[in-house]
Length: 185
Image 1: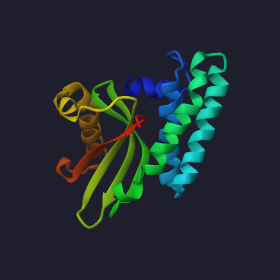
Image 2: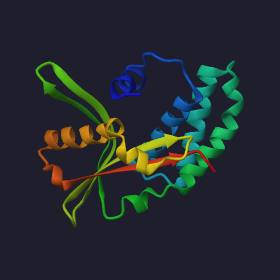
Image 3: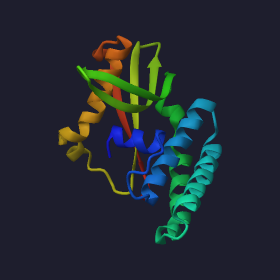
Image 4: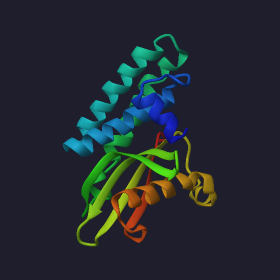
């Protein structure tokens, strides 16, 4: 639910929460997009990567769980997302700067901000940077409600501030974008 929890679970491989189909789904989608952007995979290759990773994670971690029966439905939804997600359109005119860009920045003395930015891109024509955060969801987003939720918006504000500071880039040169990857048909 937060950057530190993400770091502990994903990168340190410490199990701090009950595994869930939603967690494995989100991780597999993120990794498929990451691999696709880094390695120029086609939409079909991203979908296959996702399905293989998701199925393996579910087999390794939840074979006896009732959620395992939902795997095929989640794979269908993930494939649908990845086959319509057009990262080339989202990133048109941009060059990839980084994928899963780690932040570990000093806030004050020994206190630090930790996070991983899903994607950073640069547009050489405009001289602007773009921070992208992929958000998997099983519910429709109420955009107006999200815009009013300062706690929700803090993640992106922190990404922008600390990434700009770390890279000595003025905040007025950095744009941010959430891309909602909704499982709903």
